[in-house]
Length: 490
Image (tube, rainbow, N blue to C red; front, side, top):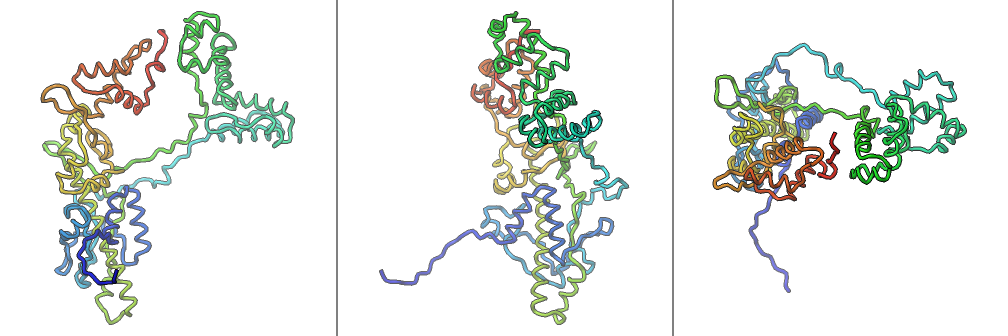
């Protein structure tokens, strides 16, 4: 083969830094967006935050470009230009890229309430829940034990896990404290009397036995079941258990009901469940007297950006700057404008997608869960002329305050289950799950509904669904099987 030169024409997708930034901003949560803006304010001297009361309407000058991205840029990224951020670089006119008043900025909507209210700071409203270890150490401090026993008690409490169980042997504790095992065992029995009942147990049987003793149940069928037949209670066959224990089925059923009320994890009330406060990204509001819903972005608490007036004026005087300094400032100026424009485009895209969701799910907003319709990303994407991946980014970890409560935008998207009747519309999977939950809540505990029976009842309502689908939905709802839900009659 001989080497030769050929000319070939080809197309390929190029992800410019600006397009990558736009995609990244689109999928950020509200908290992540705030952190990103704060980081940019630290790194980019051309950007600055403007106070809410000093913001004015921006009037672009003749040289400032506000046009949408080109068709080529949109098609290259697989997206339509509507709702997307430009992929091509734009020209800058340093004399007109921002107004003389330095008002190139990202603003809250005119309808947003900008009044500053007097309220305590966020730090002043924070509270710290008492942990299990702190609760136990406080009880140890007022228990009246001597210093040696308190040292052992502190070591015992330090080895209790979040569920309330002691995960270290007596011999190991004795070796760590330099105390005989008998003394450690004695202090452990004192810890067993602490609140919550059952704390410091070394097994589930011991934990439940301690709770039975606290209830005054010192012997009887319940103690026998906890000690020797605890695993058999998971799949209750009361007749077989009664035959082993040598008592009546009614006694076994009564003892099982007592055991069901015990706490297998005594440390659960002190578990550190950090509740995350969800702030809606968008409001769906129906004003009294109007038939249509309004879509409003929630920009409260987010930094509002504009280009620094000093650097903007400095770039207008090219003779006062060196080549390297001017190049740096131009780069930072371009980055600042791209960030402001990308955030504005992000907000417009979220509003457009939310408005389209409202169009499809109008009946749900009016009537509630029973009117939720099946909806997939493709329907919204085709309606808006966007790519499905864009809709997915917009709806991920974004929340809307609606007349039906605070909901993630992903909630409105769900598949449908076919109906058997002629002309019947598909039913949302969410509604079917609620039907299953309602049937199980209303069932007879002595004769719980099997998956086949639930399938038959749904088919009576003209819902075509398979038994394995019922089992999958039941698992998603954290509902055990019929054999595990069976309870003896009271």
